[in-house]
Structures are given as structure tokens and as C-alpha cells.
Amino acid sequence: MTTRYKMTVAYDGHLFHGFQYQPHQRTVQGTIEAALSKMTKGKNVVVEGSGRTDAGVHALGQVIHFDYPDKPIPPERMICALNSLMPLDIVFKKCEIVDEKFHVRYSAKGKWYRYRVSLDRFVDPFKRLYTGHYPYPVDVEKMKKASFDLLGTHDFTSFAASGGQIKNKVRTMFYVNIQKDKQNNEIVFDFICSGFLYNMVRILVAMLLEIGRGKRPVNDIPRVIMAKDREQVRETAQASGLFLYHVFYDDIPEKYRLDRE
Image 1 (tube, one colour):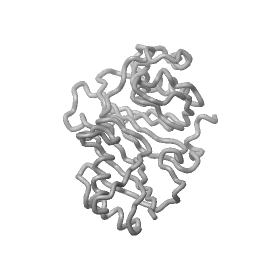
Image 2: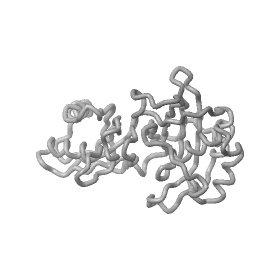
Image 3: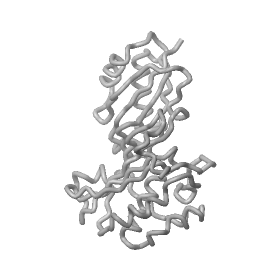
Image 4: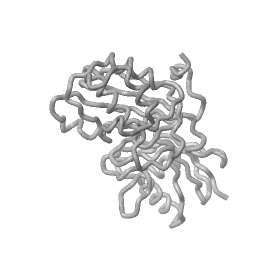
């Protein structure tokens, strides 16, 4: 008899080779599974993640689940036990016991990714691990206007990097928000979608920055979507600016349903 735990975890992705386990590499999944193996005296506990973030990508609200094979541990004690075994670049924030029918990936209704890009002329050594870098003037209003064309249900093939294994590339984009953080001289991009393809957010950001810089017309997105061709957007923003911000397991709140307007 096992107990299924659902946990929210944050991590600094800089020193990880992504979330998914890879032999002889430091990964988030591998680190958590090693801790669970210690807790269960060598038993194999498989950790499932809501998304497989790439090397250098961070998470504020990654969600995992696993089936604990020993005597159930109260959620607060499970958080304390796992955090005591984690390196300083991983921390568990929430924990609950869930029904065995819950699946961290298949039960998700949508995901929220945030991307931060620094507009500083030179790379700031204290921001370089947590922002992308784009040292050019950009028009935020142009990017906002263009982003409305992403809302709704589309085939996002043009925004999927090669290497992804998902064949169906139709997704629903619920929400896009682009804001200038004047204090830090950064642009903050938020995307909430039913699901994301391989490198999709980083490709979207690269294209929107080109629009903001005037290298693409504001109305270029519908053409790119219709083309279903990755060659239409060749650039990909750096991994360092990307954060898995939140995973939705209930319906997307109305305030984030811009696709209905």
C-alpha cells in the first residue's frame, strides 16, 4: 500500500541539467529520488513532474507527485524531511496527500511560465543567471499588441523546437502579459497556456523581442502560426530567464482567461 503525495517545489536551475533524470548528470528529479531512497532505506520511488524544465531553467511553482511505499508521513513532516535532505538550490513549499487517480501532468489544466529579460547594455553579473539579455531598445506597446494574436487555440508548430516528442501541437493560450520593470530595466513576459511545447516560451519571447525592436511587423504572428514552420522563428531566448511559475489543477481563473474576450 502506497500513499501519493503532491508537492510544490522551487529550484534554481543554474546547476541542474534540467528536471528529468539523466544518468551521471545532476538533475532535479534525480536529486529528489535520491533523497526519497534514503528515507525509504533504498526503495525505488519514482518522482513525476508537471513539466520537464531544461538545463538552466528555474521553477517557483513546479509540482511533483510520488507514491511513498512506507508508513504515511503527515504532509508538514514530509516537507521538513525532504527539505532537510535537499541541496540549497531546491526547496519544497507545499505538500498534500492526494488520491491515486491524481497525476501531476495529466490532471493539470494549464501552466504559467514567466520570462524576464534584461535590457542592460552589458550583462549584469548579478542578474545573468536569472534573466535573458537583450541590449536593444524595444517598444513594449508593440509587443503587447502583437501578443493578442497568440490568444486562443492554435497549432503552435512554428514555436516548437526540434527534439520534442509531442505530435499534437495544438494548444490554447489563455493569457499573455508583457510589462516593463523600470526599476530593474527588464521586460517581464507571462504566458498561461493549456500546455507548452519544447522551448515554446523561449521561442515566443525571441519573436516578440524582434517585434519590439522593429525587426518584424506587429501583425506577423498570424502568418507565423499559419506557416507551421519552425524556420519562421529561428531565435530562442536564453534558458536563464525562464521560470515555471505556477501549475493550475482547477479551472483557469476568469481573470486569466483573456482568450474569451
